[in-house]
Image (tube, rainbow, N blue to C red; front, side, top):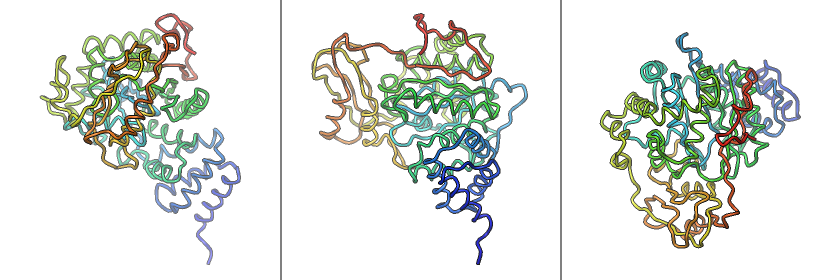
Length: 471
């Protein structure tokens, strides 16, 4: 008995990609439709993913894959008057990356509409939704109609992926994890840009991180991913740019879901660590410039800094909390200038401080080591859907470049187990590097900005506040 033509066709596609051939747009469309309608076997999907991981895709294939994934579900449509106001950013993930929490309301305070569709964390990286779900009552599940109303009333929302948005990606993402093909460049590009393309955005900024605590360890490989994402986004009609940012030490001083909410609120109150403010203002400034809300990148950064200082972004965040289910009393309390955050956010049962073993300058703090320990303490998940402990985390009590004395506490670990294991003690102590004053060199978080192809910045726009130019 002969097999159905569709099965033979899928087999032929897998064979051709396995042997290094190129798939046509029609074949990629048939593959994605097969994934969406479940008329292709999981083992065949897995085989195709592995073939793509091994042989890669040319640019035309990647663009076709991204477009077909985007069109596999609902594509959002917004009121015409919002056309150039719709913006969003996506981060490839890091340690202490709470940028979205202050960025979305800051952009809304500057007149943008931000329909931020985020995810839960997996492996060592924390998810934006996990952080927000540490706030009592916060509801990440909103219908398209509810998202539209929140954007009308507030200007920003941070929600989970809806059932109708890019259903093919949900299938492919789960199988990529199961088949060890997560780090495939065309598959990463298709997954990220298809979801962002379906949001109906005018401008999109990718924060592509590189370093020890990032998916890509060096600048060149991160740049390759960023360029692929920028090409795909612009090909779908979304004005897309990318920032390459360093991800070695944790961002800010807090890592862990509830603790990062506290630090994001501090940023929204005009306080908080400098590197967090640097990233929020730079990314926000890029998006304001890309969406024509600002005549220059530098002016856009000033606009973001102003709404962080004058309370306008904080007001938007409070309104977003209430619109997404948080009680008025809790939202008001969290956003008041003086509050005990742990009156509403759960604090871990135990706090343990570790002390520096030498005198000297804090040269480095390894974010990957810290994230790995926190993952084992319950802050992260090893499979999708697994529950996590939102209260687990760390506070860094010393900053990079700071002089520290032997016996001085440099980190506070929040945990629910009675004691940390000797291995966890050792790993955390090993993440701190102390050296001479001359061995530390200050480096900005942002290394490079890849502009949308239809834009050009002047050298002045690309300069740092101290007058130096981005790499």
